[in-house]
Amino acid sequence: MNYATEDGTAVAGTVYTAAGGTLTWATNDSSPKSFTVRLTSTPFSGSRTFSVVLSNPGSNSVTVAPSSATVSITGDASAGTLQLSAGSYTVADNMGSVTLTAIRSGGANVPASLSYATVGKSAVAGTNYVSTSGTVNWAANDSSPKAITVSILDASPMAASASFEVILSAPGGGAVLGALSSSTVTITPGGTSSASTPPLAIKVSGNHLVDQFGNRVQLRGVNVSGLEFVAVGGWDPANPWGSQTGDATPNWTTIKAWGANAVRLPLNEASWLGLSCIDVGGFAGHAGATIHADPGGNYRATVAKSVADASAAGLYVILDLHWAAPDDNGTPACPTAQNAMADSDHATTFWASLASQFKANPAVICELFNEPYLGNTALVGDSPWPDLLAGGSVTKFSYGGGAGSMNLSWSTVGMQQLLDAVRATGATNVVLTSTLSWAQQMDGWLKYKPTDPAGQLGAVWHPYPGSSYGYPAQVLCEPDGIVTVGLPACSSLEMTAVQSILAAGYPVIATEFGDTIGGSTAPWASVLLPFADSNGISYLAWTWDTWSGFGANVLITDAAGDPTAGYGTYVKQHFLCRAAGKSPCD
Image (cartoon, rainbow, N blue to C red; front, side):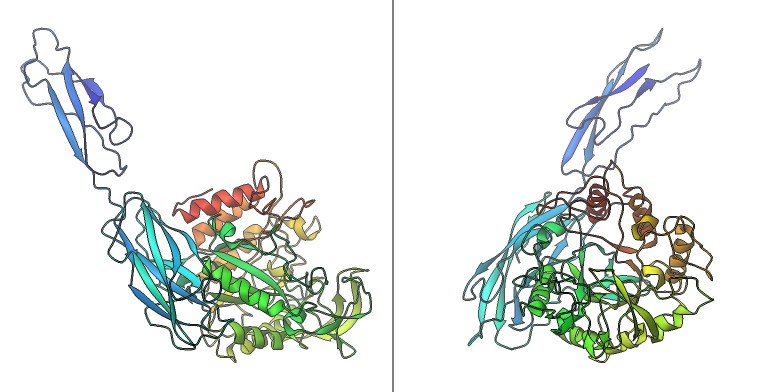
C-alpha cells in the first residue's frame, strides 16, 4: 500500500520533510513495516501537526481503521527573558561613560532583541550625559551578556549627584522582559563608580582578544581617516575631522549598523602635541613656513570626544600613530606623509601623553606606528629588523606636497621604546606593533617583537593587494630577501607567517586591508576575510570616507553609509554575516 504525509498546522519544508512511498509484504509475511518522516531543526514554539495517510492497498488487501494518523510536534523554541543585570548603577562624572549589562536567560535557541533608551530624571541630557538609544541583538544560541554604554559629560561641575534611567522595551523574537527592565544611573561629582558597571573593555588572552566578560572577540571594523591630515593641513581649523565621512563628524551608529564592533583612528603626533612645525612641502599651502599643527586648538578634545562617542556606540577604538616627523635643524617638520618609522624627537612624548589620557579606558587599543618601511630597498639578512625594534637612523624624510621627499638624516625610535613609553604611564591597554614593508612582511615579527611586561601585545598586519603601493611586477618572497611584499603574490608566505604568530600565542589584527572598487565582487577581500575568520584574526577595512575618484580602498559613497560597488558591498555583507554569528560568510 501507499503512504504519504499531509500538512496540518505543520507545513512540509518548515518543521518536517514531506514523505511518501510504498510498503510491500511478501507471501506469508505479516511482519510490521516502518517508514521515517524527518523533522527539521527549525525552532518554533507551541505544537504543530501533520497527518500520515495510507491508500491504494494491493490486490486481495483492504485497509481498515486506523488508515491515517496525526503526528504532533512540540516546539522547543525559546527566546528567553531579557533584562538588565542590576537595578542601579553609579558612575563618577569624570569617568567618560557608564556601561550597563543586558542579560538573556531561560532560552536562547532563536534570535532575540530589545530596544533601550535613556530618560532624564535629575540629570540633564546634553549636560550630564548623552541621550542614547538603540537596539541590542542576540543571535540564535547566543546568551552572552551585551553592553549598553552611555557617555557621561563633565563639562559642567556638579554640586550634587544626579540620575537618569535606562529603560528597556520592545523585546523581539518572542522574548519577554524580565523584572529588571529599567535601571537608574546615578552620576556622582568626582566620586567612584560602582563595581557593578564594567566598562566596554578588550584585552589579550593567549592568541585572541576577550571582552570584559571573558568572551572571545574578533574585531571587525573600519578605519576613519581625517584626523591624521585635516588639522595639520589647516583645511578646517574648526573641525579636525573636516567632514571626510560626509558628516561633520563620523556617525558611529551608522558604522555599527554595518555589523562592525571596532574603529581605527589614524592620528598626527604634531597635532596631538600642539606643535608649531615647518610646512616643508607646502601641504598646508605655506611651503617652508612655520605653521601650527592644531590651528583650531581643539585636536585633543576632538579625539577624546570621538573615542567616548565611539565607545558609547559599542565600538572598540584603535588609536594609531599614523604620521610622524623629525626635527629639521631644531625645528619640528610637519608630519604630512607616511615616513619610514617613528621619530625619536616626538614619538615617545606622543605615546606618553596619549597613554596617560586613555589608560583608564580599557576599550582603547594602542597601535604604535602605522606602516614601517625601513630597508625597503634590497635587504641583507635581518638588517632592518633590529632598527625596527630598537631604533636607528634614516636619510630621507617624506612630506606631502612638492616633490614628496628630501635628503635628511634623522633618528628613529623603535617599537620597544614606544611600548615602554606607554607602559611607563601605568597603562595596561592592548598594544599592537607593526612589521616591515608597510606592515606586510610578517616573517620577522616573532623574532623582533618587543617585550611587554603587561602581556598585552598583538601583531599588526596590513594585507593589501600588490597594486596598492605600486609594487614592482616581480617581487621576491624569500624570507631572507624580501624587497617588497606584494599581495596576493606573496600571500601564501605571509599567511603562513601569520599562522606561526598565532601558534606562538599572540593575536594578529589586520588593522588595514583594502580592495578594488567596482564590479560585483571583491577579489582580494573575498580571499582574505574567510582566511581571517577561520584563523581567528581580527580585521579593519580602509576606509570609511566618502572619497570619490578612487579605484580602491574606499568603503562608502555617502554619509548614509551606502557601500561602494564590489569592495564596500562585500565588506558590509560579510560584517553583517559575522555579526549574526554565522560562519562561513564567504
